[in-house]
Image 1 (cartoon, one colour):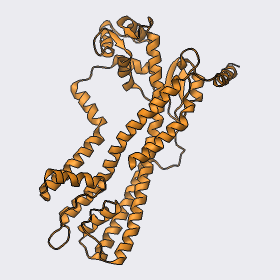
Image 2 (tube, rainbow, N blue to C red):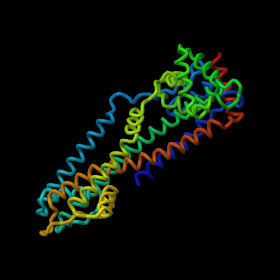
Image 3 (cartoon, one colour):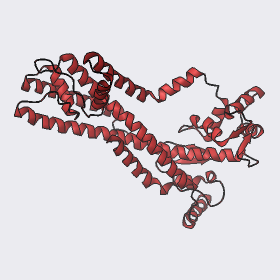
Image 4 (cartoon, one colour):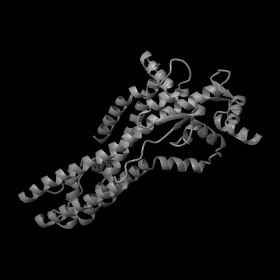
Length: 379
């Protein structure tokens, strides 16, 4: 559900911005048309200064607005109060142990529905209705916060699309013989043209970094792969190319550390699933499939496998506390992980639309408008 909401909001944003991204001049390199790029840059303006493409951040939020960290802290405080009040009520109304009351607060509030225990009094059922509605409101607020972060990411995707197009344009200018590849001589001339003062050995090392397959020629894909990691909101494309040329070779441990950093959310999700499986097998005596059934079902709010009750019909304190905290902290991780990969797919679609819009020749009306703007700037 979260992924669908995020995808819908992002696709809507991309569709609304598509027309504003069409900025290819009928003849010549579009990266040499700063006015068109600035006019149609969308939320993240793209400027050109002396033939250099620079992606700049949008305006900062007005002073006085709460920061995102404050919003997260406030949400956490509200959730804590919500759970404490409901735990206390369930314990007093039904006479349950605090552990079981906490478990039931999470079970109903997060709409999991394990079905391990149930209320016996009408007053408790009436309270549970309000508790579930508040929980749904909290989930809706979390979806709104996450959707906002995804829309912000789609804006960065728009900006990066322009930067990638500018890198391709730089590659085309360096390819003086129009062969579609850069020879070592062409790459050397391009790097020297950026003002890099490299020794012969440093220049050879830079060429090897761009020529990944060591065939003596730099393909466009190799050029993009080398430069793209150095793009940021405040650096020009030329600065990114220079950084790629001067970067030291990364060791295997550095590459592994980067991968771990980029996939830390997925790793955390895997650890959480593994923890649920391990608890189910060790404490409940389930087999591997049943334990995985519990872990995935609980984090996905399916409530497929409930923890076992004791002989007196109550949940053991250890099981109640573990499952309560496990689901309370694991459900957001599960949702964020799925949303992250949904976001990747959405960003790819946005980027593809941006590329099509950039590649489309502008109409005669758009060209006349741009010509008038250029005339006004000159005057």
